[in-house]
Amino acid sequence: MPCVRWLTFNKLACLKRPSHGSWDAPSAGSVTPPGGRAPAPVMGSLRNGVRRSETYILAVDVGSTSIRCHVYDPAARIKGFSSKPIKMLYPKPGWVEVNPDALFEQIVAVVKEAVDESGLHMKQMAALGISTQRATFVTWDKKTGRPFHNFICWQDLRAVDLVKSWNKSLLLWVVHKSSGLLHFLTRRKRFLAASVIHFSTQHVSMRLAWVLQNIKQVQDAVAEENCCFGTIDTWLLYKLTNGAVFATDYSNASTTAIFDPYQLCWSTFLASLLSVPLSIFPPVKDTSCNFGYIDESIFGAPIQIMALAADQQAAMFGECCFEPGSVKLTMGTGTFMSVNTGTRAHASVTGLYPLIGWKIGSEITYIAEGNASDTGKVIQWAQQLGLFEDVAETEKMAQEVQNSDGVYFVPSFSGLQAPLNDPNACASFMGLKPSTTKIHLVRAILESIAFRNKQLYDTMLKEIDIPITSIRADGGICNNHFVMQLTTDLLICDIEKPKRVDMSSLGAAFLAGLAIGYWDSREELKTIRSVEKIFKPHAVLHNYKPTLENWELAVRRSMHWYNKTKQE
Image 1: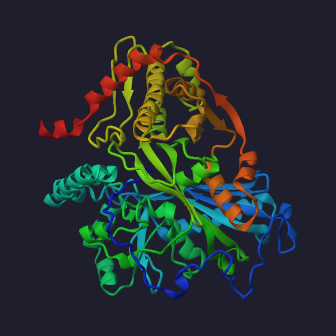
Image 2: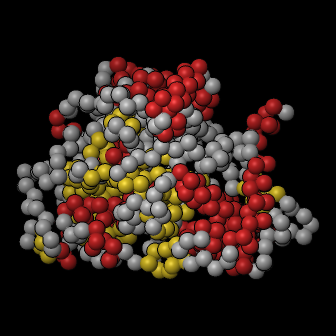
Image 3: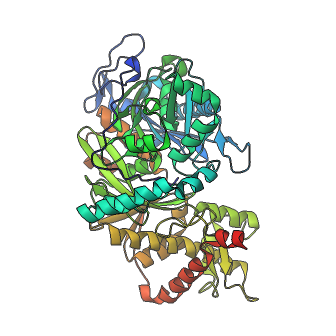
């Protein structure tokens, strides 16, 4: 899912959250499980006298459409797996929700099925790592633990009028102008980025502001200081520990648009601007640390929760993109291109979001991320349209013709993101003619995915002053060799495709395993990671230049479409 940035001023104070007793997860190694049995430390290959080969790592990945659980052995081989689709709710046009209690029940069921399939026992699970979709949130009663409403998903559009109002507001105009002045005086790029920022419905900030304005239960709870806010990771942690731990991690917090990645705290400026009380937010912990134990009544064993991570950041860790300049290209429902920027947060004026990749102890790693919302979504749409029966057919279909016969597709069902940033762009085919066949349409769709990859990569090269050292792809679309090869040719770079594409789950497992000594180091993780194929550039870029230029023309003609149609 897309994430957000928020640039704040240097002198903003960080949130100092008051203590909530047992709700603040203790530091790694200090949590005692139910029953008062203090855990023995895990060192190298031993855990409580049990050999590493006899214990396993659990990883849960809550994506946008499904829940997956993997059981990994020391070689990161999958010993057990289970998956369930998430039950999505659409109570009103544009509203997208998930029932929090139903989601938790599904997650518990998926974990049990994965362990059952492995033929192992819950007591053999050394630790749990959790990866979750981003910017989906819920609020709940601090005393009873009951949710005030369903999860409001990142695709939800209920706050669209609020977003339009804020983007046209005098207050945001003042923020833009003052930020521009600060940039002129200081030459700091973060102020330049703040001078062009706009709100989006994908921002947690806007949907949370809508909740505070429209749900009386939440308003009353806030007044009584009895309201908790959490993204999926926070809710899942709270439920798994039977209400004992209320926390999130830096990677998830940084994707809410309410957390300041520069000051490393909840943004007092933005909270004040939107009248959001800071008291509802959870403490922010390291990505890889001891968050507590799963209540023994759930799985019959008190498993350590050793990692929380946002899905794209987890995937980056799973791809072993540990060094500055390493790039992860995820092509799933949407496309996410992320680059490791090391210890420095990147300020962008074109829509590359400065996010925290992970924080482990004193080490903090930042990433810059650009996204295109419609990737797998357009493939699914084309399949429903009847252009093909099986997604696997598309690669061969695209190769049956030399070109798309002058047909160009603009993949913007959800608007266009970086570097164009136009929410009013429309999806479209251009250049249709009597000779056009469905094979040409399929090729045009696949080409558009590679062209968007090229746009994101060029934006990254312009904005990031760090040499690109590697590109690693994951996600379902990377199984399409036509898209992979064309992307490689356009970027003029080698691209590695892993044997496994569930990198968010693997990254969560790696983070949890490192925290307990199941794996000794990141160097060991690099030896575990397996590459299926390295795509190398074949064609010369200028051979595709006319096609790319015509596609860019089609994109420009699709922009601002919904503004135009409303005016007409």
